[in-house]
Image 1 (cartoon, rainbow, N blue to C red):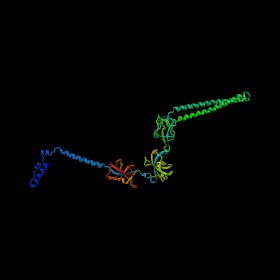
Image 2 (image 1 turned 135 degrees about the vertical axis):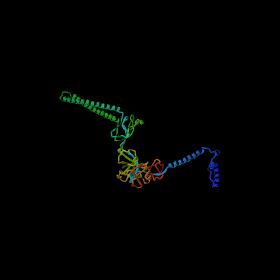
Image 3 (image 1 turned 180 degrees about the vertical axis):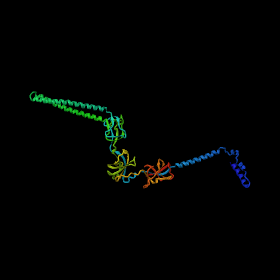
Image 4 (image 1 turned 180 degrees about the horizontal axis):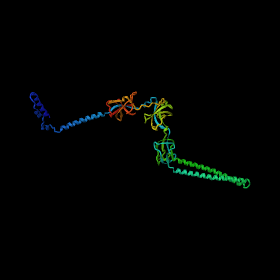
Length: 435
């Protein structure tokens, strides 16, 4: 190629010198032609240039794609706020807040009062039982035999009482008759006295047998009680929270068998006795009084505010935690409230008035609402991505907040002042989270 260019330039110079003479195009083409020997001399084969050009284009395309991928996936730093329920602002009148747990004032781990092997367990976790309901049964063959023997002893004692009763009656009649005959001199006084002695002795035997009959009845009652102990009953109505034993296991109130013996069949909780125990810092316990109004919020249901009041301030402090326990009564009973749930209690200056129905939806900062394609939108952070939600905010202002009737749930994190570059599905990096 270099030889051809030089030849062309030399000829072009002569052409420019003769402005009036016509150009011979064929001669110019001949000058541009490269002979095979010249190509071989310069080491340029017929298939080399297309490969070189193709490799350069691939490198450029790859560099451009990597740059586009980096720019498209770079996380955008954003600030977020948590969407809250309109009813969440009711703690303005709170004197103090404390955390604690739901507890049951009435609960029991039910066990048999005798040692025995379970033949039936009639409960499962979550079952609601009534007072006196049968929960389990123990092997009762030995106790049944003892009861039958005791009942037979009662019958034998009663039969002996009846026999001695008849003998006593006869002895009294004989003594009375002989006493009359002795008075008329028909029999000796000694015979009359012997008859009277026999009557008194028979009466004494009758009384002793009556006592024996009472003993037999007591033994039968004891055998019946032991037999009844083979059936485990619910001491009160409630809900089964744990099932602690299975058929074939030995239960005992004394755990005589060590680790192989169960001490309970199941645990019953009276759900009507649920209340809240909270620990209040001793520095603020003076603010809490008995019968003081309060509100409880379960950790599991943060939007549900339960009316409550203080039952009592327990007159004992925990020196390790520097707290005092306060018992709080829940004024609403609900199946959603279960023992050991975490609770936040707000102690109020005065009882919260029954408010009108709170508007539906959630409150978000007004700055979280942006315009995209002529629509009001918010971006909800899900994991490390921003998800666009089209919203229709209510015209009424709630301070610096806006009410969104739909599309956003309480607890969602929304982007505050979303940048113009933020789009649906974009990767985000949360700098700071606030309310």
